[in-house]
Image (cartoon, rainbow, N blue to C red; front, side, top):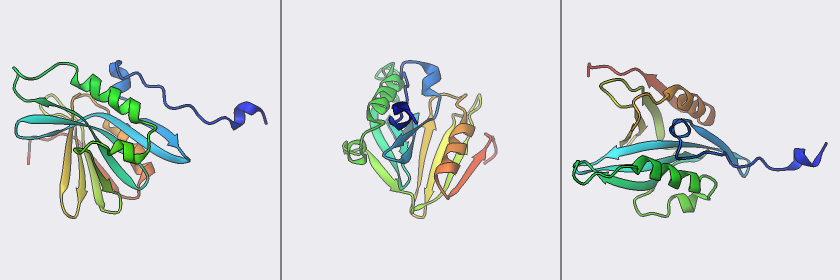
Length: 173
């Protein structure tokens, strides 16, 4: 056994400025536990899009506030997804309290999660991630219509013992 075998694995090397890197689900080992990072997700509010970096830890899902942008084209700014990815990369190896430091960040205990639903994107629909609990459904949309939902679904199935349901977009309700 060499010294190289005893060294910890380096943090995932992700350049948030590369589109390909932002489409890749990052799995890292943090203190012997797996953390999954998914970037590019946002929630829709009446006047804004609220961007979150999603960190899937074994015991909870951390929804880290990354910034917001306005729906109005006059107030919208470019680069918001790159900036959110930079925030996510900076926080990838941080403890949970750092992920939730912002007042608009929140966590969902995995014990409360009944189902995780993933809908692939299409020409008409953006990819959608729904975290269903007994009390509410938390919906996120992805900025990239061609986002690969299969790799995220596979990683979540490995991480959690909850139903992870994949679907294709449909124009029917």
